[in-house]
Length: 288
Image 1 (tube, helix red, strand yellow):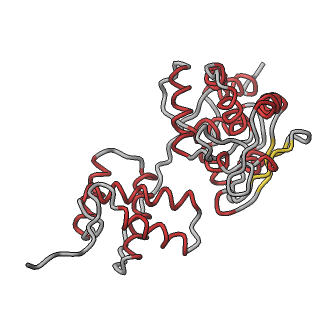
Image 2 (cartoon, one colour):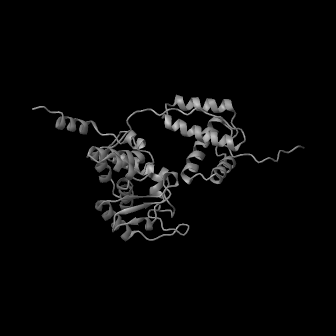
Image 3 (tube, rainbow, N blue to C red):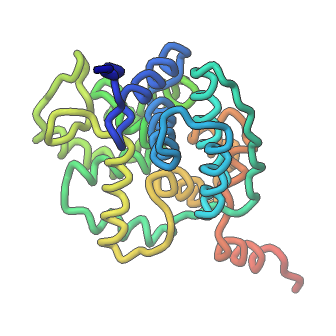
């Protein structure tokens, strides 16, 4: 009797392919956040195609499905980047078109909405996390990666290590956030993970990840009665930029606080609200 001794991938998980892809990306210097995103995107692709070795035709159908779901162009591009990397790993390079970004204004939360979100929080750790990310203009991965040594509550500074693009940077806290952090640190037991003292860790003794940060933000946004679109990036980045610009902050300062390489990135979403435009219009365009 002929027996097929080949190792089959577990249906729905594709663990072998995912692990191989993860190692491939790691060996090419990709950052953990990129590896996590790309492997997650490929799991969706495998599930749609019912295989971890999709053909060009299957990939095209999968990409068509992304359009049918009306996903953002940036999301479709991220799927395309992941697929191209995966196909390169397989030795079957594939070139997919990259979509031009929509020049639409990004979502943001108003000052009142941000205060409502903070006001809905009754968990001191969660309040410290969200305030630190908001006032520090942090990305979710940067928040998750913070250690105790990265926070200076005397000078109100944050040392961001290996941010986007692997770059270090300095950002700031205000006294409101510092008070919350001091209260949090008074009761938080110190805990080492891989020889490092994370500023925030879960009740299960590990660092938070981006998905958990998203869940926390959306939960408190719901409790605050806010139904508009937007998660951590909108709260921590879009909203902070909008708030600073609307209060007269020079966009070059906003660029430095958000740690953008190119000011065009800042200009794209550090817009001002209709209310602010109207106020400046009434204030400056007057003939008496």
